[in-house]
Figure 1 (cartoon, rainbow over the protein chains, first blue to last red):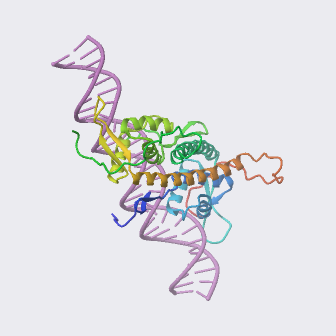
Figure 2 (figure 1 turned 90 degrees about the vertical axis):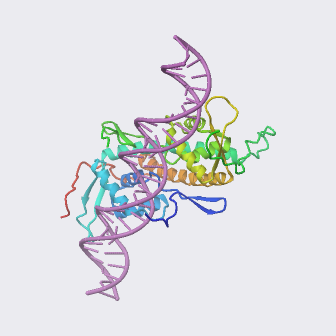
Length: 157
Length: 157
DNA sequence: CGTTACCTATGTAAGACACCTATACTCAGG
DNA sequence: CCTGAGTATAGGTGTCTTACATAGGTAACG
């Protein structure tokens, strides 16, 4: 166990200030399928393309290769060893029909996810900006979004 | 180990057809923080509100209560036992200043995530609909998005 | 020949969630 | 009074996905 590591997804960057380190969050699979739909590729190349697509620092190679193997086991992608080209051997992947179908399903799912995020953000903004001149019914502030420390974790009365 | 369970996130609903069962995907925490920013509430009530907000079937109570306890340990929410009201005792939660700050951070993170999803979907749609009359340079089809089974998982030549 | 870049893997641990079970209190009905 | 349904809170356990670390090959270059 390594205790000198920061929490994975949230970290305090100052008093009362937070940074949420968003992870790829189940993006790796659909992103890889998309890249393969755009053209055949090999692992290392996919990693570079993923970085550009996701705008994330460094994609983890280990997990990418594992993902590709798993997808192949399920028949969603197919691979051959590159014959031409000198240099180290590359395993070149391409999408199968099943893989394309899965990509379609992912697209639908991601659209739904995006909508849910939109809903959430919409409600957040409605809360955060109650300074509109029109629709503020005078004295109906949503609630002081903050209570001073009244922790009370003890047992029930 | 239970082997009679379906895969968590993808399931085949027909030949060549997939359904992606999207999970809450790290939505629970920001959603709970948002609901508490809108007003104090207790676990059971939050579960119902979450179902409406996320449009998901049945929220898991166990994980929700665990999340609330964890948030309280970090000082992001504060709870008191409801005194008034008849019926079983309720632990009423409210957002602290720190919790509100975290919600802000989550909002920024979710916006970024939504953008990434948008980028991905944009490229997907560009692939899926290459039937535009204007920008098809004649014979540059992106690639047949499918290769017939040429699996070849054996060792390297 | 050693170093570096390219390319493909495996090992290990942590975090978040699904699914299941347990507890306790309240209230209505027989 | 006992029972059962509804409300409310909580713990156990397995699995999935990811982060971080390590390892082993090929080839080009000085």
